[in-house]
Image (cartoon, rainbow, N blue to C red; front, side, top):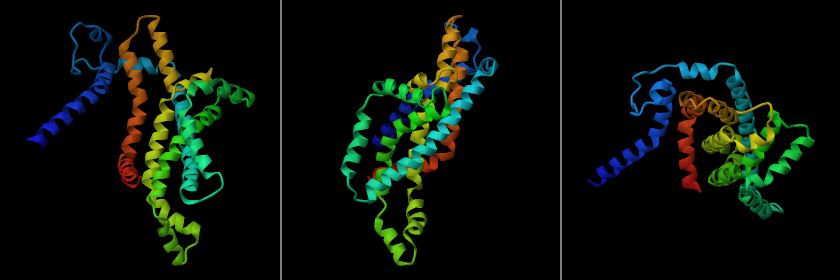
Length: 272
């Protein structure tokens, strides 16, 4: 009886969590006249793709999508590369300044992002990287790396160094032992960290608002789209269609990595 009650509670909680997403997609396929009706409709009885067609008109969405994809992919690659090396260093080697480095990683997490905007803007302006993919990628990478290092540190520390030592006794070099023995065991952790980096870069708004001018990522595009819609009366069907289009790449990404991500999160929880 208790398990049944807990299961029912879990189902209800899941429905509460899923309903906003369902309502977003439903509204995206609902004509504006039915969205303004006093009686809401919870089923797609009048589904149409007109909202999506109007959102895609003009090509601004495609340009913003390309900008977001380029920045996000570059950020994920750079974050995983640097964070992995940092996590490996603080987990496996003793070196001068190790404690200070770990404290610096933790301290950076406490800094409010808004307090860095002026310095970041001047830095990019001096390097002529404002309104560019490279400039925004550098800022995203710097913002995401500290927590990613801390996340990967648990995975690296959870793989015994004795495994590499045993492989070296069998004749492998240190590099070969790491690549053949340790690295495959860290793959789930890298996937989980990559998902975190992907979500942070894909949904980030404030840094892009500071660093971009003529170009725009999808969050900036959605803000401008909503502002333009407000001038003539907000068309919530188009706003929801735009939000659905932004969410689709995230859903597709999750479908590809969900297995690895789940095992990575569980491994991190067990290994600490």
